[in-house]
Length: 236
Image 1 (tube, rainbow, N blue to C red):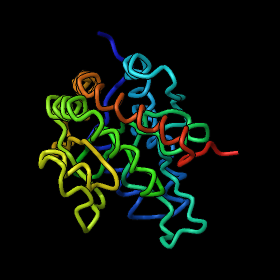
Image 2 (cartoon, helix red, strand yellow):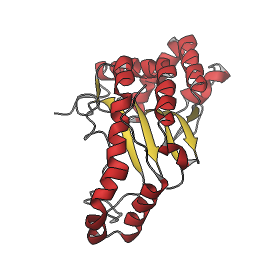
Image 3 (cartoon, rainbow, N blue to C red):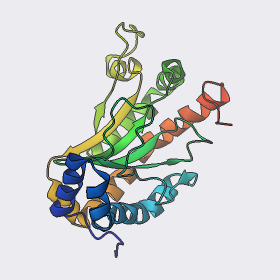
């Protein structure tokens, strides 16, 4: 398959880090076009090359390349950190956030010495996630099959925050890590940043996103119920 993606070189990543280190408008303006061509454009190309599989998974995804990628220049208003430039960049493959707040999403993220991608579902209110817990108990076989799909995709389960007390002491042990989680991520991480300089990463992500489809569908069903039950409301 022919891809738009032209790769992200180690030199471009080094320049992104230098821009963050200098943290000056003068340095950024001097290297703005290099950063655009070396970092921003390839990330936009990545979105284009993954769009068809993402739309096949969920036709409601919002994948405008110029809108779903983080900016190199940070908005520091209301932020404790006044550092103006990023050294990590990301893409969110998700539904339009104003119409579908907190919707689950696939992601790609790169750092100076690593990168990762996967599937994430978190909500601003932990109580909203009780809907996902309920669904796990209602459809344990479906959920465990979805977990297996993530394992098959090369993803590992991660959680930002667990309940301190076991909320479901009588539940099957294999479900408890998920039932006591306030959020869920299934992710892959690599320390080989050189792999971003090849279209092989596109093939890899396309396959992983597709294999993990059952979990995305489970998450989307949970999110729909959260909205129906009023835990999550579209932004005005």
